[in-house]
Image 1 (spheres, rainbow, N blue to C red):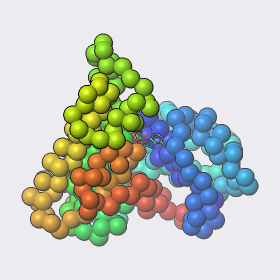
Image 2 (tube, rainbow, N blue to C red):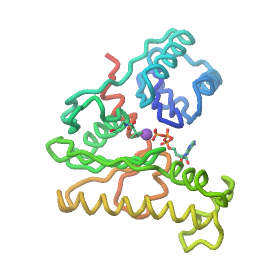
Image 3 (cartoon, rainbow, N blue to C red):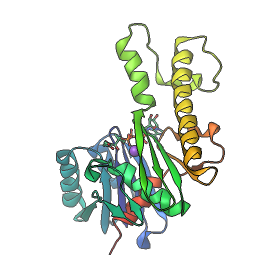
Image 4 (cartoon, rainbow, N blue to C red):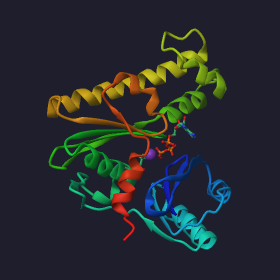
Length: 249
Ligand SMILES: Nc1ncnc2c1ncn2[C@@H]1O[C@H](COP(=O)(O)OP(=O)(O)OP(=O)(O)O)[C@@H](O)[C@H]1O
Ligand SMILES: CC(C)(CO)[C@@H](O)C(=O)NCCC(=O)O
Ligand SMILES: [K+]
């Protein structure tokens, strides 16, 4: 069984693939290393042979998790590393090692699935956009605060914006002008994300006309999928790239 991990800034996304890398035996989202071990230990007849991970955390944090996995399961752990070029994609950053590895892997996955120009949009703690042309050239991208950061900034820097998670979820059932604080904030931030997406689409059209594929990934992709009905929503896009960057043999 193969353990795959995407260690983001807020959550660790994990999944376990069965022997041969085919079926998904288990998957989830956890908020700590210990919660990850708990989830894994709950899988009956877990028998890990290999682990591959991508992390945008510090070297120390990633090292601690790697050591934990090695000692708990005696498994070898491969970490995705930055590279100038891979699987036909050329990293467009001036200093390629500074490009977030989650972005890099989502780009590898997207270019592989599109076999042509693509726009990769990831909606996590941060929101990112990356442009890859039909030659695999990464033109660069954008980084913005995601939904959790936008709402927390408002909560932190105002005195009267306070509401709970359940109210937040209910507020997003419509995007009409809000008549309560929670509706006004949740719908406002959601519309900001949608506006961002529409701007990215405009830019992609200016480069490639209609000849490109849009990928949506990340925990909050569903907030914007309505404005790009033609987009491919691929929740595991980072894992697609991870398997390419860290193959079994
Ligand atoms: N099962 C889930 N657990 C946690 N968050 C979820 C879940 N499903 C959707 N989300 C949403 O996904 C967002 C987090 O996105 P995601 O998990 O892609 O990124 P992250 O790990 O927080 O950050 P990064 O951008 O660094 O990867 C949160 O805003 C949350 O509302
Ligand atoms: C932008 C995030 C936080 C998205 O998860 C991550 O890709 C990251 O930390 N990137 C490093 C900075 C950069 O990509 O330029
Ligand atoms: K991410």
